Image 1 (cartoon, one colour):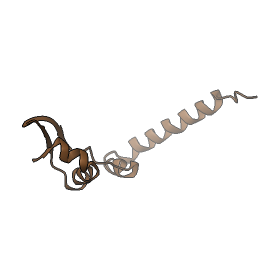
Image 2: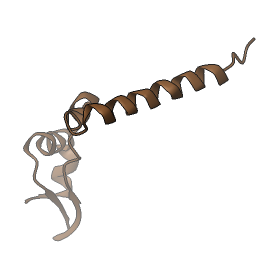
Image 3: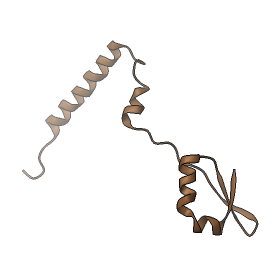
Image 4: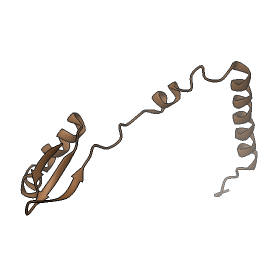
Length: 87
């Protein structure tokens, strides 16, 4: 845990954010010798491909086929019910 004064944070805000993003950890902001805030890094970002990679091989082929059929059925229903609002 790193401690910085409010003045240091305001003067070097970009550098503080960079250290949170790349170094992780936690920063406590001190004003008048009292902690007033705590900065923690945000959650790591994940692409859709990375998120779906966890699903790979978790369901068997039959369940996967049923899931795909449900998706295709939903797409057909949407296509049939969708109309052009400018027509």
